Length: 309
Image (cartoon, helix red, strand yellow):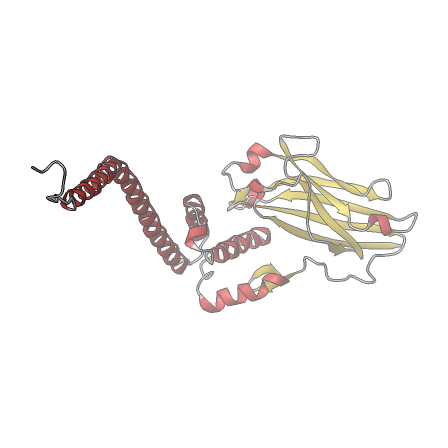
């Protein structure tokens, strides 16, 4: 059967540098009545110095014999500073079937380039996108009709956000109505990336200062500056960061003073140790002399003593 449907899917990979898994997956989504998911190798798939990215059939093991899906694909690693700098690999045609359940690039982008401060990884997040054009499906569809994907996005004030983020974004705009009035970016991928950075940043502000390191705070300031440069009005957020910084500084000053006092107490105790020993010795001598004094006073010099004349 013929069915030509295309869709762009965006995947935000958080905490990229600290990922421990060799292979990670996006949530499932639906394009052309078929279930898919993105699959990535943060440290490369047989390409140790590269980031590897693939589109995979989400339910291949449960599909009946003879299924096939003809697609046209293109992959992008989004540069969050400039869309012109994004890395897009040219479109490729591929037939998915039982012997070929995934298609992508093992050398999507070099890790050195990806992790450099050039806009590909911002605030620990990497944004990737795939354009899936379903040209033909042989066999039964996974979903009757074109169902909404798991990763469906909804427009909130001009920003495409996940359904799970809608309430958070709405609250953000209700509390800070001018937050995006000067935001200049028009690229939908980058707009999604920016709003995700902002949401991640605001959510991280709920952490206790105790759980926020100097590096974390520096990263938050960098993210705030990055968003401000893009046109967001974030004076309220900068004020909050300043409050956290001040609290953190007071906390660190108290901890430093406590450590200093602990060190002084330890040093003083070591200096007092000989005096404590001397005090103990003098106490012992005093008790001994008191006993001798009592014994001397209790001695009876009787006239019946044989030594008395």
